[in-house]
Length: 103
Image (cartoon, rainbow, N blue to C red; front, side):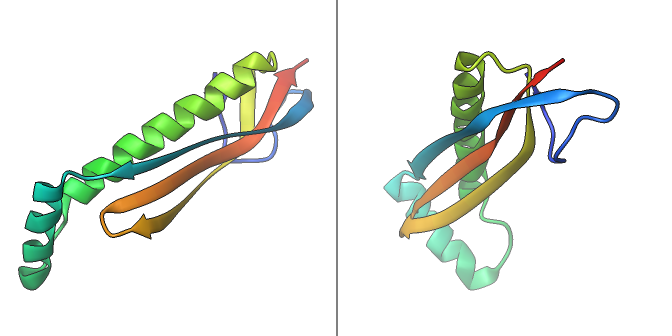
């Protein structure tokens, strides 16, 4: 499945099949959350949270692709990601786009 963050595929005629999306709410282990709060005192990357969001994006993307495949899509255009904090140590990641069939 090809994913594009533009609204068309250059040189290809496409048929829009519909909106597809994948979402996940991911949390971190309490111990890693505690370590991250200490890290905020000295600054720097919160690697545990970076890993959490990377994993969440991968899961959300797979769910979006699965939905597109169920529609018979060849690609997804206009792919976007959104995230929001649900509670301390947990975030929602949403992946969405338009499933298309290449003609």
